[in-house]
Image 1 (spheres, rainbow, N blue to C red):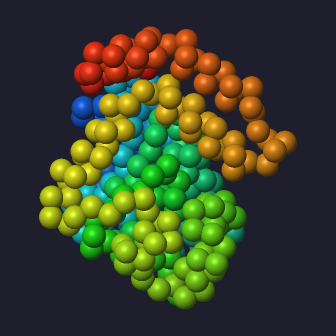
Image 2 (cartoon, rainbow, N blue to C red):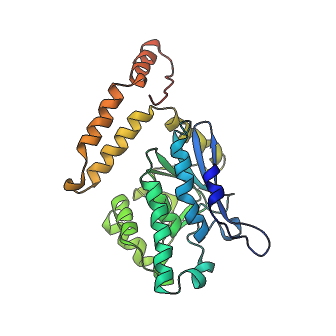
Length: 276
């Protein structure tokens, strides 16, 4: 992941450097938020790293699905690193710059051409919820807790973040999440549609990898076309590029993968898709 080396990082006094780690394994692009000393809270420099990591994943044909996770077991993402706020978000100019890099990071996730999955465990809070909502899918360990504590901190949320939450859980649930700032269990999150699936706490890493492998083994062009169509459904009619959606659908039928899928079905074997 060469592009990540171009992002300036800020070592702490003890030499530890919070950062985003990008690795690829068996078709899964893992984006790991590594700041375990603060439950993987995201620093300004880490927000800056995300677009470069996604650009690398986009360029790597072996990557079929992108998974976002926190380092270790303490947290997915506990939110933005509040310890930086006095230095990074005290003036209007600082707030504007911080929001700029946050918006760019979110756009990199949302606009990815490959499916994205938030793999959450223990805590998914504040900016962590926002990052998870930017993904196509969200899976979580059974012990995971979810919260947006903005009302306890006096923070204002960007419209894009509010809209992402409303799109997933609806306005009534979004109001309660923000107004109460309470913590929600994985079961509650599943019931309101905030997450797609709960996986057992024991053996979570294996179960999550199996879930991702199932996605990675499917036809990339079909998933791409479906993502485009689903996104178009959520857009204003005037903003929809239905010609692009139709072209993506036709590309599926014109592909080698379509022939492979039919052949595999006839031969009663697992297909081997190449995204071509």
